[in-house]
Length: 175
Length: 256
Image 1: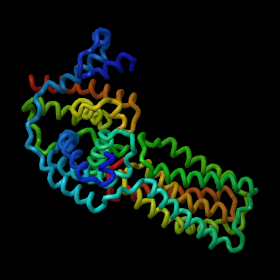
Image 2 (image 1 turned 180 degrees about the horizontal axis):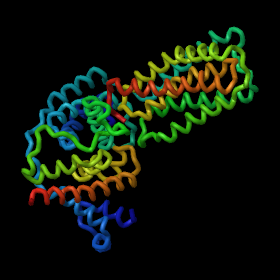
Image 3 (image 1 turned 45 degrees about the vertical axis):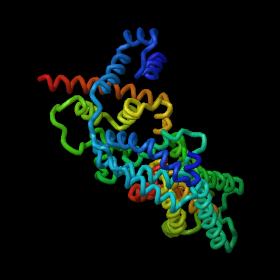
């Protein structure tokens, strides 16, 4: 990161090779659209280059990068929606439209996506970062600008809600 | 959440130690937690085509070669503070031809309110532009605004020099005019990081605070009504306008 901050393109390439695909996966899950995620990856790494003077030496890189990616997704959703469709806190609404409408239940992956999409943003992001990106709660707290205990409470509630939602979806498909 | 529940969360994805496993068996919350976590991982990984990321890489590399030197965030803060200082100094010099301080309250009160407003101006600029590891608290910003508003109103001299409407229009117009440049500079610099409404509010309070400080020192009117409607209310409105305008402007970077 220090070499990249000084303008070393090889160092940037190393960071890009390591993180571009995982960030794309995260953004795909967050937005429900792989093609939107591609655009957001571009915005994320462009922001990374432009704002590298804001990176605080000694802090962790990965949470910072995911914070940028989350902000880019939030900004993109904010601009593509009417203000009345956002929550009062300016966050993403609980439901995120997918690129293609999911069938009633064409598999567990769709069920998981549908359940995740029903969570509020404050619970969905910690779960995506924890379950799919393998980040610790301390790293997620850094990425979200919250305390670790606040992130744990959100993730705990999110996992509980997911279990209920998945059970309900499972029951729905059985009928 | 109990400490054991917190430890269960830390251990998710790996084998649970015996004591935590027995806790999960007895704690309904943790059973739901582990159930939700496991349910997410039970499905196969989605099969998606490889994303096309070459354009993203090339665009970022072009940007890097165009700007090989990073701009430290504190340089932007210095620029903003320089704009504030220029507006403040220029306005006081221009309007203070017949004496720098028109406020007829006691010098101690004038000084205390001025220092408090100055702290808000500097502190607001700092929290608006500095990278922060924790989200800025709405309560903190609101408390600072209320404290400054209260001291501005309560620290008035009580004197009325001009007819109320004339005095109000003069001060409101001056506050709007003096706030244009600081607000514009703050908004331009705010766009270099991700949009956060609370930061935009802090920037707005800080930028419009420059005009509030000029009025506090220069304006001879000291009634509560005048201070509230012609000084404090426009200041709060301008801060609100800053949030609204920032929400409409594109971000040059999404960094926190």
